[in-house]
Amino acid sequence: MKAFIVGAAGGVGTRLATRLVEAGDAATGMFRNPDHRSRVESAGATPVIGDLIADDVNQLAAKMAGHDAVVFTAGAHGTGMEQTTLIDGRGMEKASAAAAQAGIARFVLVSAYPEAAAAPQGISEGYAHYLRTKKAAEVFLTRTELDWIIVRPGHLVDKPGDGLVTAGPALVEQDVPRDDVAAFIVAALHEPTLSRTIVELADGATPVTDAARQVANSVGPRR
Image (cartoon, one colour):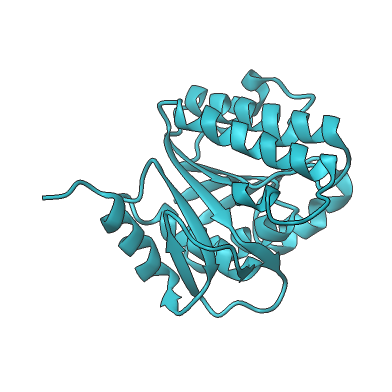
């Protein structure tokens, strides 16, 4: 498999590239800041500079051409509500349209727990906007013809992963290592029956490959 990672210089993106290569796959990593080239290369991905704000759908599709899947894990990372709208929102819309134009059906969106907006007291307007934007991006993606998977990780932490998770359509939000989010995405990409569904993800005791298969079975047609 050859995967195209949008947001490859980020915490999940770099780990995903490494996990893909370890699994025998190939990864191309798109990033905006030229200073991040070495970070993407060190993770094992072929580096490609791209800009979700400046590039149009045709330009993004040309970069994605020849890949089997797209993983969108880009984000504005607290740089302001306008950037959140342009990257997490409009950027995802452009990326999904580009994937379709490039003939790539498989599309994974790394999203967020929507109910987190109600949990903290005194939540900032910027964070509330981020959650609303992520939700709108999910809605947009589910209305495309793509073979999509939406992954909602819990609170992301940098401790080493062990490849064990809890995954399902609805979970209580908990911590989850970025390592294990990346490992689960690789497993999901290799589980063809896991399709057009939302998966919430937390730390747990189930190997990622088994977790991906179990979620696929749980949301599949009943006989």
